[in-house]
Image (cartoon, rainbow, N blue to C red; front, side, top):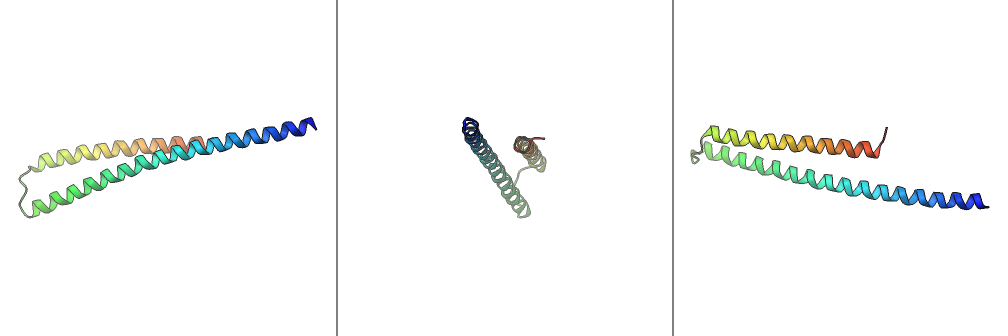
Length: 101
């Protein structure tokens, strides 16, 4: 009888730990989703700015030099690339912790 009580207690402890792990994983995933959504918003903003610039260049209303524009675009692309690499590394960490080898 004593052994069955210990087993029942062990099952409850494992269930609580498992629930805690899932909650932690869920909050981590939510954080990653939030970061990813902010990156998508940045990319969308960059896309809109680029389209505006192309339209204004086509109409001849913009006096900004193309070298300054390409420099700015290059910098933004580098930021996006860095952020995507960071997200990829974080996702790999989350995946590895969810499915240990």
